[in-house]
Amino acid sequence: MGSWTFICIVLSSCSNAVNNPDSPYPYAVSIHFAHAIHWNSIQYMRNDDSDLSNLRRGKKLGEVHMLSGNACLGLDYRMKDGDATLLPEGTAIYEVVGYKPEYRLLANGELYEASGHPDAKTIGDVYDIAGKTAKVSFEGAGDGSPVSEFTAETALQFAEEYLRSPFVGFDEIYKTHPGGDPVILRIRLKDGSSFRVSYWLDANAITPGAFGTDRLRTIVTAQQKRPGQEGRSPGPPVPVR
Image: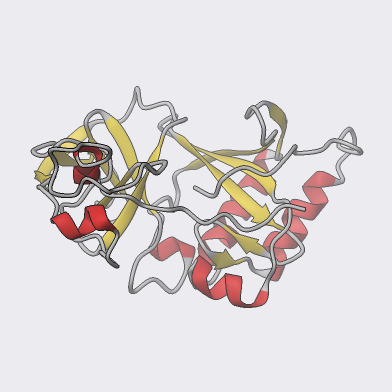
């Protein structure tokens, strides 16, 4: 059975400390790093499978800075503004033209998207995509292969309900729902960029950490039952983005 996926963040300055006998932290252990930036009290995760060709870099917001040694020891270090897991010190952080910086950033030519917001009430408070959705489709989880697209009308209905869905954060979802295998969706925006969404239909829980509206679940379930969809599986679960 699948399970909710927890993402472990290890900070970038630790990469120089791991297994380095000359480091002041020689006993730091090697851990798989997730790509993340912390900025303006928001954590952003790298979107590594979107077309970025039509995205334009906006105003420079700041730079990645050196992290404290406590991060390397894992002593309950919490990321602070300017921290990044795998970007070098001094890497510039930029706005993305056409999007609020609370949703998207560019750094090192890579796209980073917010995984939450401390004041968010709905997904629309996290994801600045209102009026920007072009297509919604099902994908295979293992290789990202296309399965089928929503109808154009239903894609717009999905986008509206998705943004209305109450954002609670995955910590809250974990308390009452044991997990399972999600349906994988891709939301494509009008500028050609896109992102994947994991949707646990039984729990009505959806990334980036929300409970879907009843209508959202009805829309997705109906699209699964369209002619030609029977027996088509989205594939095995993948890490939450």
